[in-house]
Length: 103
Image (tube, rainbow, N blue to C red; front, top):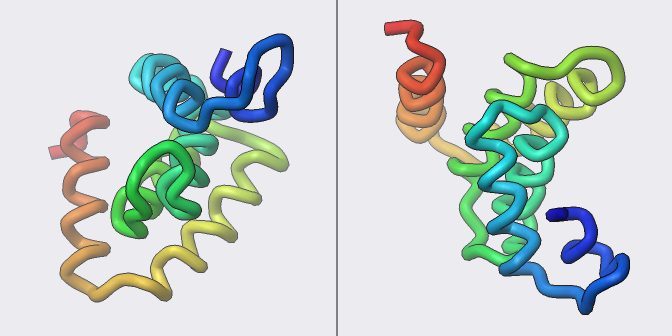
């Protein structure tokens, strides 16, 4: 559903609505939705631009994805990290570990 709103397929384009649907699916661990959330945060699409949140969602994608999606998320994770301080990366990583129950 998020892609429909993001790309204007069968509905009018609406970045905020796309973000909402990506978030719903991402909260259930869907790798494609997690990746789309990272892109939304990185580009400021439907949400305020936030590289720390982008980093968090790329990292989450890496934990759930495989193949090409994993490789894309890993590459973009490195690019997002370039925009952050070490403490921001640590905070995002801690949040992901908390979400995944790795604490």
